[in-house]
Amino acid sequence: MNIRARLRTRRGDDFSLQVDLTLPGRGVTAIFGPSGCGKTTLLRAIAGLDPAVTGELRVGGETWQDAARRLPPHRRAVGYVFQEASLFPHLSVKANIEYGQKRIPLDQQRITVDDAVALLGLEKLLQRRPAQLSGGERQRVAIARALAVSPKILLMDEPLAALDLARKREIMPYLESLPRKLALPILYVSHSPGEVARLADEMVLLDNGRVHACGPTTEIFTRLDLPLAHGDKAAALIDAVVVAHDDRFALTALEFSGGRFLVSRKDLPIGHRARLRVIARDVSLTLERQRDTSILNIFDARIDALHREGASQMLVRLDVGGTALLSRITRKSCEALRLAPGKRVHAQVKTVALLA
Amino acid sequence: MPTPADLDALIVTLKLATLTTAILLLLGTPLAWWLAHSRWRFKALIEASIALPLVLPPTVLGFYLLMLLGAHGPAGRLMDTLGLEPLAFSFTGLVIGSVLYSLPFVVQPLQNAFAAIGPRPLEVAATLRAAPLDRFVTVVLPLARPGFVTATVLGFAHTVGEFGVVLMIGGNIPGETQVLSIAIYDHVEALEYGQAHWLSAGLLLFSFVLLLTVQGFNRRFSVLTP
Image (cartoon, rainbow over all chains, first blue to last red; front, side):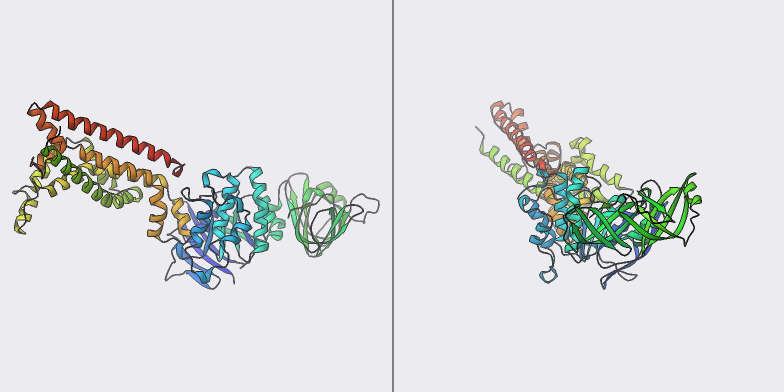
């Protein structure tokens, strides 16, 4: 089952959304782009909240919209989490969560109210009123409420944007756990590379109402023709699996297609899938493999592409056993080492962050 | 002490106010909803017409209604051809006049309440599978409750206190179209100040208690409109 969306709509005279997308039927797909690029418009189009949308929309074998008909929003099996929690102020937390669940036929219920409550850790808040909740709690209730309708697709419109850093940290673990526990495609709108890096398997880059690029998050982050791979925060994302713990030195080993990373010991079970982030400026390149070095993570790599960054810097995209890494070095070093596409080098990774 | 005629006037007044308020809520709710959401470009014309009784002398409204509903008016002649009694100087005529006169007092609080809810709660309800009528009943009605309370009380109280329109099209038929405000006027005319005091003080107290109740009620539910 997947999602096929060929949609278009206009907003005023100067903005139009026009997309043609096939999205995976599970995992998190981020809709990413600057403000005003049409992320929310796309989400609303999928939910059926914008009556002016034309085109075609199929979700898991069901046609929600085509030339002949257009299902109204209440007939579409979506769960929608708005940027502001938008809880019903006249209903308790429990009644908010039950509101949608009561309105779907019994045979379509796959996620019960209890499931939704447990997934978001809301057991102790059920009798409260929305006015008695913190911002983070409210957003958790909103997510549980959207899940309790057993949606075929969960749409999340920047659910963290209205929250402060502490609240974001409070909710992030719940968001990370959702795709692991539910076989449900999630569309996650965000303009934060940090959130996307943590959560998204796939991403759609939206620019001025058009799809600029789409593909696996790890690939989009390292494509030199796209904006994410540039600037000071350019980083590669690597999906890896926890394979061993070293108790003597308190290290954890994570394996990916190009080798094995050692990081400070993390309390994760063997086999846990985790995502690592390696910032481009933390990767240096050598032609010979260094032996007398304190750096633990050194990988054989092949230069894939080079890109000049400003007057003095170069961005190098590396292929490490099928996984992309970025390295930012000076133009001077680049010339001294005679780096060129296809050349074999050794990538020394000074720091690596475990995201999730 | 109030006379039996005064009690009749009280009953007519309560009947009139209750019926008028009920009709106004039934008509005013869809009208206010439409006004709160329509982007029709001549909407301002409708809004101005509804608000007219706020600024127009009630006698003017009453006069035109009399012209319209009286035996020689267009509506009066229509009733005549249909073999019905003319509406002027009848309780039904009184209700029609009161509905028009009190319309803005019901429509405006409702319209404000509906507009204050905004589109978001309805969109949320739609994504939670609620059909349009379901959304209205389970989301709009509870959220607009303070607006409904205000509209009901203002519509009722305003009808109770009406004088000019009633005098024009209702006449002053005891037990049929004589209401409290006119009864008070009659007592004063007849220099029966004691009777006038009874009724006036009663109305004063009634209005005050009503407004106090509304305030208390709306404050208790203020959590609904954070």
